[in-house]
Length: 334
Ligand SMILES: NC(=O)c1ccc[n+]([C@@H]2O[C@H](COP(=O)([O-])OP(=O)(O)OC[C@H]3O[C@@H](n4cnc5c(N)ncnc54)[C@H](OP(=O)(O)O)[C@@H]3O)[C@@H](O)[C@H]2O)c1
Image 1: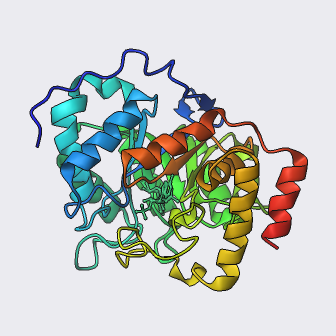
Image 2: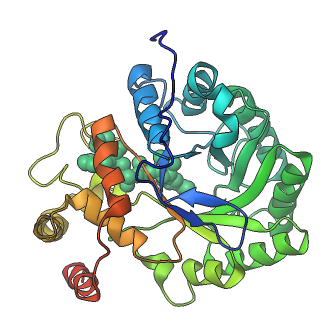
């Protein structure tokens, strides 16, 4: 680990980043946020993690997204962030918007998964210890739990915010109908849902369907943040010709490997040609596409290198896709 002291760029907020208001809240978020799901675990190089996070912060990316089980091993991405907090970001805490979540498997036994009050509250306590934080800015229920009464999960979020361990509450991966119930429950208790975190990219468009989550968010003053906007790297030039050994698929960690078929890669190649015609990389065009929906507050990219992040940040100021170009993308994805 380097001993060099981190001095963030003084022009970090005039460096190209743009910010969007999160629903009807007082919070604005950068159009691009950084995710810690992959590349920040105990198996990854700490030097590389720190370089990516510093590059992000130097370019106005002040929102970092974590969860209890990001790694591998579980918990280690939060530990990596805790090291960075001590080494780089402690004096910058008030400039950072940090989220974490609980909802998927974290520890053995009946209390380390899903949506009980027991799990959510004890998991957040552990996350705070790993991240060396007193509070997170945002805490999510990571998925809807059909076995736990919806009121129990939501009241746990209310109580977490009231306890000061999180400033805002959010939900992720909840079905649209339950999301509407959640928005109403939380608003009635003066802990309005800040944001919904959902998978949204050129391939995964279901949240935009009529009656879907994007509509519910917009109708309730709730923000929306898109995860996996590059479909885990499939919407980049990564897999156009082969599966690189150093890629997520090459490491056997691509959960969408069913998309690496000739049929779907043929569509990705057509998207790539279109991006090149626009003078963009495919990654930039895929992010521009997500930004083209004004209901999207921010998107959370992953990056395994500073170089990838540099490319992705160019999407902030990219020319918007025209209606004809959006129609061409829809036609390719039919
Ligand atoms: N709420 C949830 O359930 C949930 C689920 C998933 C993700 N998330 C959040 O969303 C974040 C992002 O998810 P994600 O990592 O799947 O996002 P993504 O941005 O779709 O994919 C990131 C991966 O794409 C590749 N990549 C990125 N930029 C590239 C570029 N310019 N050129 C070529 N390849 C590039 C890299 O893969 P290589 O490693 O192959 O280089 C990188 O690790 C997560 O970290 C997490 O915070 C939340």
